[in-house]
Length: 386
Image 1 (cartoon, rainbow, N blue to C red):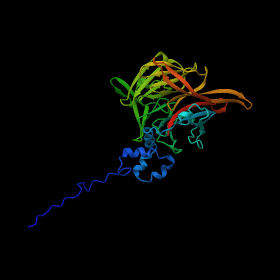
Image 2: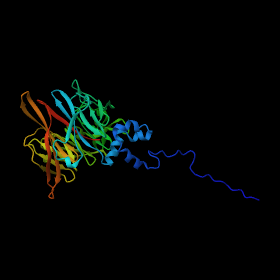
Image 3: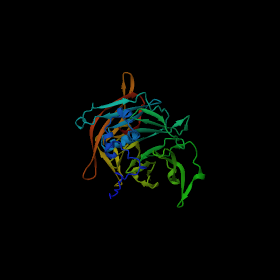
Image 4: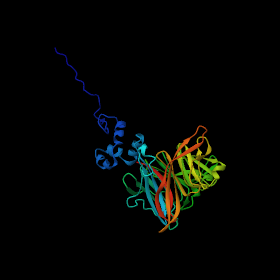
Protein backbone atom coordinates (compact mmCIF):
# COMPACT_ATOMS: atom_id res chain seq x y z
CA UNK A 1 0.00 0.00 0.00
CA UNK A 2 1.40 3.29 -1.00
CA UNK A 3 1.72 6.03 1.57
CA UNK A 4 -0.02 9.34 1.18
CA UNK A 5 2.46 12.24 1.07
CA UNK A 6 1.24 15.63 2.23
CA UNK A 7 2.33 18.37 -0.12
CA UNK A 8 3.14 21.59 1.78
CA UNK A 9 2.93 25.03 0.14
CA UNK A 10 6.27 26.28 -1.15
CA UNK A 11 5.99 29.57 0.71
CA UNK A 12 4.43 30.40 4.06
CA UNK A 13 3.55 33.98 3.17
CA UNK A 14 -0.09 34.70 3.85
CA UNK A 15 -2.19 35.57 0.83
CA UNK A 16 -3.56 38.56 2.74
CA UNK A 17 -0.09 40.12 3.16
CA UNK A 18 0.70 42.39 0.21
CA UNK A 19 4.19 42.18 -1.24
CA UNK A 20 6.68 44.71 0.03
CA UNK A 21 6.86 47.65 -2.35
CA UNK A 22 10.39 48.97 -2.74
CA UNK A 23 11.63 52.04 -4.52
CA UNK A 24 14.01 49.82 -6.50
CA UNK A 25 13.51 46.06 -6.62
CA UNK A 26 16.03 44.01 -4.60
CA UNK A 27 17.52 47.13 -2.99
CA UNK A 28 16.82 48.50 0.49
CA UNK A 29 14.94 51.81 0.38
CA UNK A 30 17.80 53.50 2.25
CA UNK A 31 20.15 52.75 -0.65
CA UNK A 32 17.51 53.68 -3.22
CA UNK A 33 17.08 57.09 -1.61
CA UNK A 34 20.79 57.73 -2.00
CA UNK A 35 20.51 56.94 -5.72
CA UNK A 36 17.51 59.24 -6.02
CA UNK A 37 19.55 62.02 -4.44
CA UNK A 38 21.72 62.12 -7.57
CA UNK A 39 18.78 62.65 -9.94
CA UNK A 40 18.87 66.26 -11.21
CA UNK A 41 15.74 68.25 -10.41
CA UNK A 42 14.96 68.93 -14.08
CA UNK A 43 14.28 65.16 -14.46
CA UNK A 44 11.97 64.90 -11.44
CA UNK A 45 8.69 65.41 -13.31
CA UNK A 46 9.38 62.36 -15.49
CA UNK A 47 10.97 60.10 -12.87
CA UNK A 48 8.19 60.83 -10.34
CA UNK A 49 5.76 58.99 -12.65
CA UNK A 50 7.42 55.64 -11.84
CA UNK A 51 5.31 55.14 -8.71
CA UNK A 52 3.73 56.88 -5.74
CA UNK A 53 6.79 56.06 -3.62
CA UNK A 54 9.08 57.63 -6.21
CA UNK A 55 6.84 60.68 -6.34
CA UNK A 56 7.05 60.98 -2.54
CA UNK A 57 10.84 60.47 -2.49
CA UNK A 58 11.23 63.25 -5.07
CA UNK A 59 9.16 65.78 -3.14
CA UNK A 60 11.26 68.94 -2.56
CA UNK A 61 11.59 68.43 1.21
CA UNK A 62 12.43 64.70 0.95
CA UNK A 63 14.86 65.20 -1.95
CA UNK A 64 16.56 68.08 -0.13
CA UNK A 65 16.95 65.92 2.99
CA UNK A 66 18.49 63.09 0.92
CA UNK A 67 20.97 65.45 -0.76
CA UNK A 68 21.90 66.83 2.64
CA UNK A 69 22.81 63.32 3.82
CA UNK A 70 24.98 62.89 0.71
CA UNK A 71 26.56 66.34 1.11
CA UNK A 72 25.47 67.08 -2.47
CA UNK A 73 23.67 70.31 -1.69
CA UNK A 74 24.83 73.64 -3.02
CA UNK A 75 24.16 76.57 -0.73
CA UNK A 76 22.87 79.85 -2.12
CA UNK A 77 22.07 83.18 -0.50
CA UNK A 78 18.63 84.57 -1.29
CA UNK A 79 18.85 88.29 -0.56
CA UNK A 80 15.90 90.65 -0.30
CA UNK A 81 16.50 94.32 -1.12
CA UNK A 82 14.36 97.39 -0.65
CA UNK A 83 14.62 99.85 -3.55
CA UNK A 84 12.57 102.98 -2.82
CA UNK A 85 9.23 101.41 -1.81
CA UNK A 86 9.67 98.21 -3.84
CA UNK A 87 11.20 94.89 -2.76
CA UNK A 88 13.27 92.67 -5.02
CA UNK A 89 15.20 89.42 -4.59
CA UNK A 90 18.62 88.31 -5.83
CA UNK A 91 20.31 84.90 -5.70
CA UNK A 92 23.99 84.77 -4.81
CA UNK A 93 26.06 81.56 -5.09
CA UNK A 94 29.47 80.36 -6.12
CA UNK A 95 31.40 77.39 -7.47
CA UNK A 96 31.88 74.35 -5.27
CA UNK A 97 35.42 73.87 -6.62
CA UNK A 98 37.77 74.62 -3.67
CA UNK A 99 40.55 75.61 -6.09
CA UNK A 100 38.41 78.49 -7.34
CA UNK A 101 37.30 79.79 -3.97
CA UNK A 102 39.76 82.70 -3.93
CA UNK A 103 38.75 83.90 -7.39
CA UNK A 104 36.58 87.00 -6.80
CA UNK A 105 34.92 86.61 -10.21
CA UNK A 106 33.75 83.08 -9.44
CA UNK A 107 30.18 83.74 -8.36
CA UNK A 108 26.80 84.56 -9.79
CA UNK A 109 24.19 87.03 -8.64
CA UNK A 110 20.95 86.73 -10.57
CA UNK A 111 17.35 87.78 -10.05
CA UNK A 112 14.36 85.53 -9.53
CA UNK A 113 12.49 84.74 -12.76
CA UNK A 114 9.67 87.31 -12.95
CA UNK A 115 10.24 88.21 -9.26
CA UNK A 116 8.22 85.19 -7.98
CA UNK A 117 8.01 86.36 -4.36
CA UNK A 118 5.81 89.29 -5.33
CA UNK A 119 5.26 90.45 -1.77
CA UNK A 120 5.41 94.23 -1.64
CA UNK A 121 4.15 94.41 1.95
CA UNK A 122 6.44 95.76 4.64
CA UNK A 123 6.94 93.99 7.95
CA UNK A 124 6.91 90.45 6.52
CA UNK A 125 9.14 87.82 8.09
CA UNK A 126 10.80 84.87 6.34
CA UNK A 127 11.96 81.34 7.08
CA UNK A 128 13.38 78.42 5.08
CA UNK A 129 12.09 74.84 5.24
CA UNK A 130 13.68 72.41 2.82
CA UNK A 131 13.79 74.11 -0.59
CA UNK A 132 10.97 76.54 0.22
CA UNK A 133 11.10 80.13 1.41
CA UNK A 134 8.08 80.99 3.57
CA UNK A 135 6.86 84.59 3.88
CA UNK A 136 4.64 85.42 6.85
CA UNK A 137 2.34 88.36 7.42
CA UNK A 138 3.22 92.01 7.02
CA UNK A 139 0.80 94.91 6.68
CA UNK A 140 -2.00 95.90 4.34
CA UNK A 141 -3.38 99.44 4.81
CA UNK A 142 -1.40 99.48 8.08
CA UNK A 143 -3.27 96.40 9.35
CA UNK A 144 -1.24 93.23 10.21
CA UNK A 145 -2.22 90.37 7.92
CA UNK A 146 -2.04 86.59 8.35
CA UNK A 147 -1.11 85.68 4.76
CA UNK A 148 1.48 82.98 4.12
CA UNK A 149 3.32 82.59 0.79
CA UNK A 150 5.76 79.88 -0.20
CA UNK A 151 8.33 79.99 -2.95
CA UNK A 152 9.92 76.67 -3.94
CA UNK A 153 13.49 77.46 -4.98
CA UNK A 154 13.82 74.12 -6.76
CA UNK A 155 10.77 74.55 -9.02
CA UNK A 156 10.20 78.35 -9.11
CA UNK A 157 6.66 77.69 -7.85
CA UNK A 158 4.91 80.41 -5.84
CA UNK A 159 1.91 79.32 -3.78
CA UNK A 160 -0.41 80.69 -1.13
CA UNK A 161 0.06 78.69 2.08
CA UNK A 162 -2.23 78.06 5.07
CA UNK A 163 -3.03 81.34 6.82
CA UNK A 164 -1.71 81.99 10.31
CA UNK A 165 -4.13 82.18 13.21
CA UNK A 166 -3.32 85.88 13.76
CA UNK A 167 -2.11 88.66 11.51
CA UNK A 168 1.45 89.75 12.36
CA UNK A 169 3.81 92.53 11.38
CA UNK A 170 7.57 92.50 12.17
CA UNK A 171 7.39 89.09 13.85
CA UNK A 172 10.26 86.56 13.91
CA UNK A 173 10.14 83.03 12.50
CA UNK A 174 12.39 79.97 12.81
CA UNK A 175 12.27 76.29 11.82
CA UNK A 176 13.12 73.34 14.09
CA UNK A 177 12.54 69.72 13.00
CA UNK A 178 10.12 70.61 10.16
CA UNK A 179 8.06 72.82 12.49
CA UNK A 180 7.82 76.57 11.84
CA UNK A 181 7.52 78.84 14.87
CA UNK A 182 6.32 82.43 14.45
CA UNK A 183 6.30 84.74 17.45
CA UNK A 184 5.75 88.31 18.52
CA UNK A 185 5.35 91.32 16.30
CA UNK A 186 2.42 93.70 16.06
CA UNK A 187 -0.71 91.55 16.11
CA UNK A 188 -3.96 92.08 14.25
CA UNK A 189 -5.98 91.73 17.45
CA UNK A 190 -5.54 91.67 21.20
CA UNK A 191 -4.76 88.30 22.74
CA UNK A 192 -7.88 86.84 24.34
CA UNK A 193 -7.37 86.86 28.11
CA UNK A 194 -10.08 84.21 28.46
CA UNK A 195 -7.78 81.73 26.74
CA UNK A 196 -4.89 82.30 29.14
CA UNK A 197 -3.75 79.36 31.24
CA UNK A 198 -2.16 79.23 34.70
CA UNK A 199 0.63 76.66 34.99
CA UNK A 200 2.52 76.32 38.29
CA UNK A 201 1.34 79.77 39.30
CA UNK A 202 2.54 81.39 36.05
CA UNK A 203 0.05 82.85 33.61
CA UNK A 204 0.58 81.61 30.06
CA UNK A 205 -0.64 83.58 27.05
CA UNK A 206 -2.13 81.74 24.08
CA UNK A 207 -1.41 83.15 20.63
CA UNK A 208 1.74 85.25 21.08
CA UNK A 209 3.53 82.30 19.46
CA UNK A 210 2.06 79.85 16.96
CA UNK A 211 3.55 76.89 15.11
CA UNK A 212 3.01 75.13 11.81
CA UNK A 213 3.89 71.43 11.64
CA UNK A 214 4.78 70.54 8.06
CA UNK A 215 3.58 66.92 8.47
CA UNK A 216 0.24 67.91 10.04
CA UNK A 217 -0.35 71.00 7.91
CA UNK A 218 -2.20 73.16 10.47
CA UNK A 219 -1.37 76.14 12.69
CA UNK A 220 -1.51 75.72 16.47
CA UNK A 221 -1.18 78.18 19.33
CA UNK A 222 1.75 77.74 21.72
CA UNK A 223 1.44 78.76 25.37
CA UNK A 224 3.92 81.43 26.45
CA UNK A 225 4.60 82.84 29.95
CA UNK A 226 3.08 86.31 30.23
CA UNK A 227 6.44 87.89 31.07
CA UNK A 228 7.87 86.52 27.79
CA UNK A 229 4.90 87.63 25.69
CA UNK A 230 5.34 91.21 26.88
CA UNK A 231 8.84 91.36 25.40
CA UNK A 232 9.43 92.81 21.96
CA UNK A 233 11.61 90.50 19.89
CA UNK A 234 13.64 92.01 17.07
CA UNK A 235 15.50 89.06 15.56
CA UNK A 236 16.15 85.36 16.12
CA UNK A 237 18.16 82.29 15.14
CA UNK A 238 18.40 78.56 15.91
CA UNK A 239 21.31 76.93 17.73
CA UNK A 240 21.36 73.24 18.69
CA UNK A 241 17.61 72.87 18.20
CA UNK A 242 16.70 75.87 20.37
CA UNK A 243 15.32 79.22 19.26
CA UNK A 244 17.23 82.29 20.46
CA UNK A 245 15.21 85.51 20.15
CA UNK A 246 16.75 88.88 20.94
CA UNK A 247 14.88 91.54 22.92
CA UNK A 248 15.99 95.02 23.94
CA UNK A 249 17.96 93.89 26.99
CA UNK A 250 18.56 90.14 26.73
CA UNK A 251 18.01 86.86 24.91
CA UNK A 252 14.98 84.64 25.41
CA UNK A 253 15.44 80.95 24.59
CA UNK A 254 12.69 78.52 23.58
CA UNK A 255 13.13 74.75 23.73
CA UNK A 256 10.66 73.22 21.21
CA UNK A 257 10.99 69.75 22.76
CA UNK A 258 9.74 70.81 26.19
CA UNK A 259 8.11 74.10 25.10
CA UNK A 260 9.92 75.80 27.98
CA UNK A 261 11.42 79.30 28.03
CA UNK A 262 14.51 80.75 29.67
CA UNK A 263 16.18 84.16 29.73
CA UNK A 264 19.88 84.93 29.20
CA UNK A 265 20.93 88.22 30.74
CA UNK A 266 24.25 89.82 29.87
CA UNK A 267 25.70 93.32 29.58
CA UNK A 268 26.75 92.40 26.04
CA UNK A 269 23.12 91.67 25.18
CA UNK A 270 22.36 95.38 25.50
CA UNK A 271 24.82 96.34 22.77
CA UNK A 272 23.28 97.73 19.62
CA UNK A 273 23.41 95.52 16.53
CA UNK A 274 22.85 95.82 12.82
CA UNK A 275 20.54 93.45 10.96
CA UNK A 276 19.99 89.77 11.59
CA UNK A 277 22.44 87.31 13.15
CA UNK A 278 24.14 84.33 11.51
CA UNK A 279 25.08 81.03 13.15
CA UNK A 280 28.26 79.02 12.57
CA UNK A 281 29.41 76.09 14.74
CA UNK A 282 27.27 77.07 17.72
CA UNK A 283 28.31 80.74 17.67
CA UNK A 284 25.84 83.57 16.95
CA UNK A 285 27.48 86.38 14.96
CA UNK A 286 26.32 90.00 14.90
CA UNK A 287 27.63 93.15 13.28
CA UNK A 288 27.86 95.95 15.84
CA UNK A 289 27.21 99.62 15.06
CA UNK A 290 30.92 100.29 15.63
CA UNK A 291 31.68 98.12 12.59
CA UNK A 292 33.22 95.07 14.28
CA UNK A 293 31.75 91.54 14.37
CA UNK A 294 31.07 89.89 17.71
CA UNK A 295 30.06 86.29 18.43
CA UNK A 296 28.14 84.69 21.28
CA UNK A 297 29.30 81.14 22.03
CA UNK A 298 26.13 79.46 23.24
CA UNK A 299 27.80 76.37 24.71
CA UNK A 300 30.39 78.35 26.70
CA UNK A 301 28.10 81.32 27.41
CA UNK A 302 30.82 83.80 26.43
CA UNK A 303 31.06 86.72 24.00
CA UNK A 304 34.01 86.92 21.64
CA UNK A 305 35.14 89.47 19.09
CA UNK A 306 35.93 88.15 15.61
CA UNK A 307 39.41 89.34 14.73
CA UNK A 308 39.23 90.27 11.06
CA UNK A 309 40.16 93.35 9.04
CA UNK A 310 37.03 95.05 7.71
CA UNK A 311 36.09 98.65 6.88
CA UNK A 312 35.49 100.50 10.14
CA UNK A 313 32.07 101.92 9.26
CA UNK A 314 29.58 99.79 7.39
CA UNK A 315 26.03 100.87 6.51
CA UNK A 316 23.02 98.55 6.47
CA UNK A 317 24.94 95.40 7.32
CA UNK A 318 23.34 92.01 6.72
CA UNK A 319 25.10 88.85 7.93
CA UNK A 320 24.62 85.36 6.49
CA UNK A 321 26.43 82.08 5.85
CA UNK A 322 27.61 80.50 2.62
CA UNK A 323 29.37 77.13 2.35
CA UNK A 324 30.43 77.13 5.99
CA UNK A 325 31.79 80.67 5.89
CA UNK A 326 30.49 83.98 7.19
CA UNK A 327 29.17 86.45 4.61
CA UNK A 328 28.84 90.14 5.40
CA UNK A 329 26.89 92.40 3.04
CA UNK A 330 26.71 96.15 3.35
CA UNK A 331 25.81 99.25 1.37
CA UNK A 332 28.12 102.08 0.42
CA UNK A 333 26.84 105.20 -1.30
CA UNK A 334 28.92 107.05 -3.87
CA UNK A 335 28.35 109.71 -6.52
CA UNK A 336 28.25 108.86 -10.21
CA UNK A 337 27.49 110.84 -13.36
CA UNK A 338 23.90 109.61 -13.09
CA UNK A 339 23.51 110.54 -9.43
CA UNK A 340 24.04 108.81 -6.10
CA UNK A 341 24.24 105.01 -6.28
CA UNK A 342 24.46 102.30 -3.62
CA UNK A 343 27.04 99.54 -4.00
CA UNK A 344 26.12 96.24 -2.33
CA UNK A 345 29.38 94.70 -1.23
CA UNK A 346 29.93 91.12 -0.08
CA UNK A 347 32.82 89.84 2.01
CA UNK A 348 33.23 86.10 2.58
CA UNK A 349 35.11 85.26 5.80
CA UNK A 350 36.56 81.93 6.87
CA UNK A 351 36.27 81.66 10.66
CA UNK A 352 38.60 79.61 12.86
CA UNK A 353 39.08 79.29 16.61
CA UNK A 354 42.56 79.73 18.04
CA UNK A 355 43.96 77.63 20.88
CA UNK A 356 43.08 80.33 23.40
CA UNK A 357 39.47 80.33 22.24
CA UNK A 358 39.72 83.54 20.23
CA UNK A 359 37.87 83.80 16.91
CA UNK A 360 39.96 84.65 13.86
CA UNK A 361 38.61 85.61 10.46
CA UNK A 362 40.32 85.29 7.08
CA UNK A 363 38.81 87.31 4.22
CA UNK A 364 38.54 84.92 1.26
CA UNK A 365 37.13 87.46 -1.15
CA UNK A 366 35.56 90.88 -1.32
CA UNK A 367 33.74 92.62 -4.13
CA UNK A 368 30.69 94.61 -5.21
CA UNK A 369 27.89 92.26 -6.26
CA UNK A 370 25.19 94.81 -7.10
CA UNK A 371 24.63 98.51 -7.73
CA UNK A 372 21.27 99.99 -6.74
CA UNK A 373 19.64 103.44 -6.66
CA UNK A 374 20.15 105.80 -3.74
CA UNK A 375 18.65 104.85 -0.36
CA UNK A 376 18.42 101.15 -1.25
CA UNK A 377 19.17 98.53 1.39
CA UNK A 378 19.52 94.78 1.96
CA UNK A 379 16.84 93.69 4.44
CA UNK A 380 16.99 89.86 4.51
CA UNK A 381 19.60 87.23 3.83
CA UNK A 382 18.49 83.57 3.72
CA UNK A 383 20.55 80.41 3.09
CA UNK A 384 18.88 77.76 0.93
CA UNK A 385 20.35 74.35 0.08
CA UNK A 386 19.53 72.79 -3.29
